Image: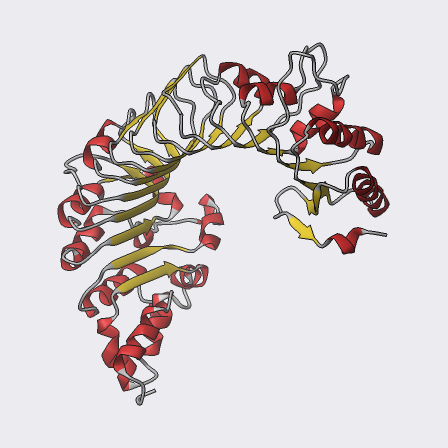
Length: 449
């Protein structure tokens, strides 16, 4: 070890993800001990083992308090550019009844922040704080010192906290912000827009306390926004945005003004008033709803979409409807060339009384690729739907079919054989799917009898 160049050893130490292991390395040799202060990042996570030992009468005296261990490490390093501090996942399942006074894990405590942030603020570029969930009911004022001292921060990530915007000054160097399971004292996001004006990436996951949230950021390029409550109105205005993921329920008003948007992942049950600017560059759309027919009727865009994924989280039997869900999709998105149909959508297509489009129905010749998730309740109905698509999609080149893992093998073999016999021109791809698991694709030879 002592014969290796110091630069190489430092590179190795910098790649150690857990700072607990990093501290242990210093006990191995004098060289590692001498180079430790040159490491420029900290990643310290409180494990369940440490938590349990700190609360046990037998071991509490020999366990260094978590905050103290963190501060000691901070002051030993010469330059700190990135800090990640939090609790490991097993601690998230600790029952509230089992929790006593855990101030040592109140990581968003402003007094704790003020004890170490001024020392590292000159070089700190990235900061991630994941608080112990039991403290999410305690209002934290950590944004104020972070905004004052973290003037060079470009990335900020905060989880499991109740955040106040009191005395927060604008952070003009911050380009990436993630807030997860946060209660904000900013019901309309006015302070967020004001204090983080130069954001390029924004992730808001499970944010509580919102009433009429409006994102209005001139430099924002990507946004991932999953709402945990049901605000009456939602607005996104971002002239530079190219990618948006938005999951909401039933806002009375939904406004999206993002003229450069190319990829949209939208989960929506309904909206009384849906307004969107011109989406001339929108090519990729993932549309999810418990009532897809209703959402399709209010969508103010669709002509530019070429890659469409349709997800119905609640299947509806198509009784008494004049058009199948497939016709509605192709009418709303007439230029789609790649179409993905999840199990609920496919089942509704199968159950439709007729597999014949009306004479005024949409042109299906634009479709070149279809991907579908099948459950195969009746093989004849599934095959009839596949044959209908093969006969009407004259430009179809590829068809990828994922069969549910509960389907018996002989039914799978029969489906594969029938499809290949029906069309040899189409490039077939086969796989297995199951709720909660990743899709599994397999070679053609593995499913032929």
